[in-house]
Length: 87
Image (tube, rainbow, N blue to C red):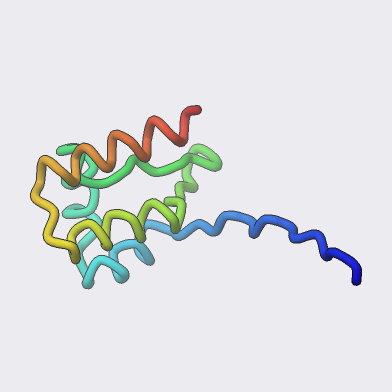
């Protein structure tokens, strides 16, 4: 029997409008207000005018809200996600 090597799945990214749709249809200005308040991770700039969000981070914030986490808990999660990103 041979062992099969598994390759890690490449991370996926979503554009801001797609993140808004996943968040229940919130507007872009509301998304950026959440970012300013530490309630959502900052986007990753791929160029001067092209930003994305890691899908894993979007999903983590959505799951935290669905689990009933309060604003302070979501801010803590976002801080952890941003720290992990910079590591």
